Image (cartoon, rainbow, N blue to C red):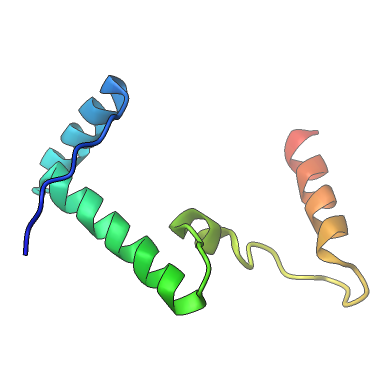
Length: 83
């Protein structure tokens, strides 16, 4: 069953979303519905909220040494990126 939802979104974001939707032959409504469906399904599955962005970052680098913890690896990756 379809229902209406009113959202307040920045005009620039709306224009970019319309352009993206047109390029992919979809409506903005279908994009929003798919996104909300995905994050709510994931939240129900894990019983916690995780955005698709967070899911994409998980496992972004592998430990070179089993003794190194992720904080050290993250610090090294940041230094490498910004120096």
